[in-house]
Length: 295
Ligand code: GRF
Image 1 (cartoon, rainbow, N blue to C red):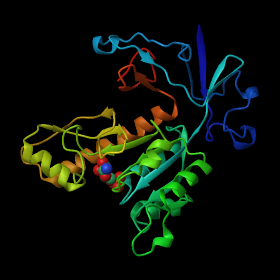
Image 2: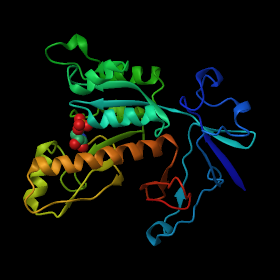
Image 3: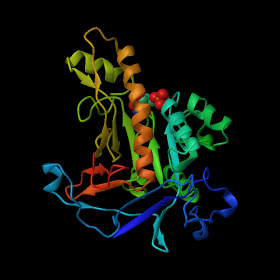
Image 4: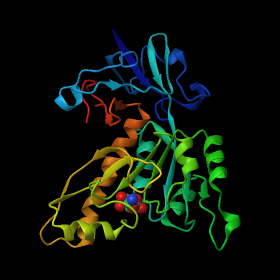
């Protein structure tokens, strides 16, 4: 049986015809709008195991985890997701994700920006784009400005946040947040984990360590977040060549360009419910064009 999938979208469907839960009113579903993002694939909602080409994946069936998806009149509707982005610095990844939401390549919206540094570039960009800025954790100098861990979780829930995206946020994520958003917090790291990660390995230090090791490839890793630094399940990576005469700055620049592409692609996938968890706990991304392909 084939099912049609539609993504509700503020760009494609004007707000008055959207339901309060951001899904599309049934009257709009058939026939789909010329601009609607839709495709068909074999009933992913009901399959517990999927056929995949690679032997590694065949050995361990995939369990589809489905959230925020509903069926109406045989049509699968995927809710537009609410995203909270955490930054400490310039926020170039945050800006790319926000742009992806604005142009429709990401089926979601950044509803909150969280930072430990309220004057950073990312926070300024958020304010100038009408995105509320929260300070976390409480600062030593101005503790009244910041939120406690439980207050942060409460605010994220009040805003209906679906996913938390760490994009250059340098503080450890508190256990309260990890437990409140299981499998819903992502981080981007500028090297190929599990190497070159962990406490103290951030920013330029990462690229210096890569160069010192003699590794010929580096590149961003996007992983789920647990209670430790850089240790959660790896979701996506992209390889960047390390050149013989690279400086840390040059390598960082090339890796950052890849980060921008990879993070937007991954956020698009999570917003479209295309993350599937293999039985051994490895998360995979289902290809957009072919539901039998994973990467
Ligand atoms: C990126 O290199 C990211 O991998 C790391 O912090 C940096 C943030 O850069 N976690 P930006 O603030 O997104 O420009």
